[in-house]
Length: 212
Image (cartoon, rainbow, N blue to C red; front, top):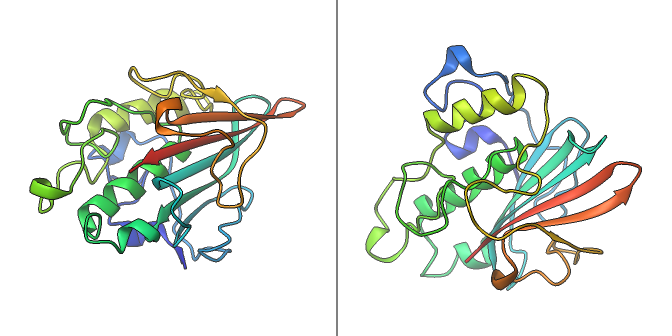
């Protein structure tokens, strides 16, 4: 099924990050225009989807279509229920962490860390599995994220983490295409989280992968 952002427990731009008066964007929650399995983009929206996309190796995946090199035209965010229906990942906090991070990616936010500990933001690399299964840490954006949104969208809707992807980590990898489930060709945990496919005329498809 296609999910609305309200079903995630937060809504970017409407005070979810604890800074409503300064949020530079105002999202409008509407019913998705696609199905979960297809998760087709729609101009001017982020389609948030959930389906069993197969044993692709990722829990979540965000794709951002850019025009003029940095203008966010449309995007999708996916949760892979192939894994979220298994005992290891069948946890609402881990699923929310993955979806929150992928939706945040479509607004231009990047990782705050890639080393495991919680920074109390869904943009970190914390895992709500095993001993952390009941933890609600890292399931929402925080005030730091709100500040980053202000920097990105206060001037324009530039996708500032196009190549850097946030704090540290491996650089973006350029690819020549994607599999039907959205996985970039050649993508792997070893190759990192960020992939870019040039489309010509200043247009790009940027994919962020949340590996399991």
